[in-house]
Image (cartoon, rainbow, N blue to C red; front, side, top):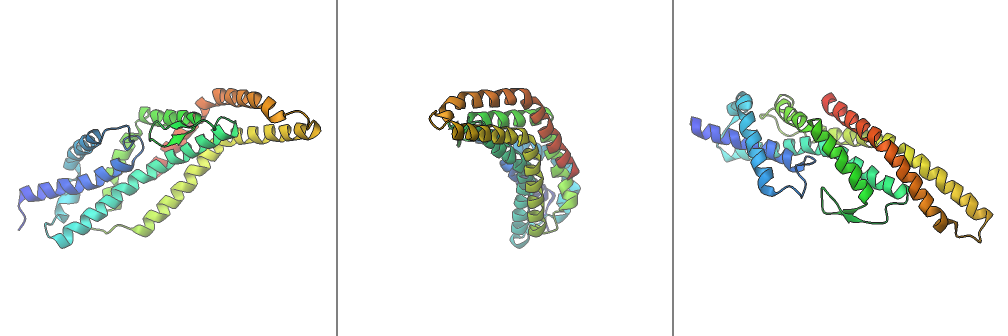
Amino acid sequence: MITLTESAVIAAFLAFCRVGSCFMVMPGLSSARVPMQVRLFVAVAVTGALLSSLWDAIVPHVSRQPGVLVPLVVSEILTGGLIGLLARLYVMALQFMGSAVAMLIGFGGMGAPGIENGEPSAPLGEIISFSALMLLFVFNFHHEIVRALVASYEIAPLNTAFDARGALISITDTIGEAFLIVLRLGSPFVAYALLVNLTIGFVNKLVPQIPVYFISLPMVLAGGLILFYFGIATMLSLFADGFLAATLGR
């Protein structure tokens, strides 16, 4: 017979497994720049805040038997990690497009430590990804993550095992949607790079004596930065709209 105190502790631990694994993977909070203690305290605080509303969904399935508790813990960790991963895939797609934009306009040769993680990347791509991430936090996307965690107990109750097939389908669909969004956002830079490089190639064929590449590089950079200056606001706004629409749609 399990007591009320034991059931409360186990219920809190199970809720923390789903919330903590989600926060460990979600964009922003999972950054290497955020101290581990901060991430832990935020996950504990959110777990405590949500436990009252999740009590009826968790406590009836609580058991201290290892054969029941261990599969529950594994399932909760995988479910929370999936929720955080689905949100992170959009930011990863934008980081990929940011690096591609920097390369397309000739600004991708200089690598620097990333803002969210320590991996070297183009500064222009980091500006795009960090600005988009900051904009998402301004729009309270982390509230949508919390809402998704609460709603996940209706879609994936505690008494059901982790659906690996459904998770793979969700990941595949999210990757497709995310890259479709960022390809639309980066299409002006792709068109600009194709047009400019095609023009430079024709000029190089016409006058092979002149080092056209070295002469044209400053102009290509200037044109790309001008296009970036006039398009960054619209680009970030459309990304935030697409991200929130996809998140709310799920």
